[in-house]
Length: 309
Image (cartoon, rainbow, N blue to C red; front, side, top):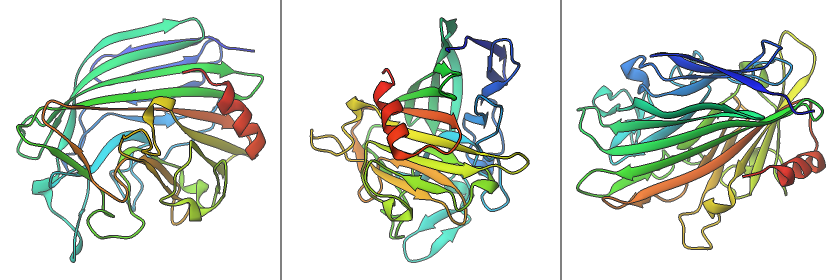
């Protein structure tokens, strides 16, 4: 059975999407500016299953700048729009506040509820530490396929980032700067601390060996603290992402960890930098399926195939 949703906008602070009649908040999109050291940017936290279980972490003691689900840029033309320490080739992670930038909320062009879901479109600007304008972003987020029978719902996240510099923007990661298996950048999910040592699945293969590999989707199953049971999150590339690079686009590779914490990112600059020319636009679209329970590969594949783009 498909459930309707409700949307509340607390202006200047956040948007909240709840299941109609239940009071269960599925997601809260926070766009107020926060600590400068953490590279202020909008994020989703909490993210919840239909049963109300939280499946995101927020400002954990190991990485205070990890906030739920957010768009990040760990290495961007020498700046850090991810937050915290910056990885420097040959020197490791260093505290370099002069490199920590931000992504600023400008306004919403649409905030609406429709049959079976809700959507909003946001305008943002990307800035280096000094405050210049490096990029504009149009971000579209939609909650849909809220299916009580399946025990799952879906979130679509689309970001279109346009270079406003007079020179190329170079998207990289700690791996492009010399650190092995640390190719995180782009859309990034941090799971709750209880999700450590969770199960990782892809269409082929499983476990931490999927780090740096390619696949249409990647799933992470964790077990809750404070309540019996599990939750499964499935991160899916849109067909238009051309994530393998076969159609000429820059390839994407999965960043995934289940130790010492749970994290997933469909990184677009894992092994090699992505170069965005002046005036050019980078668009990436993903779906995140949020499900109660421990789903096996067959059930995941069937649900992914049924999702609408």
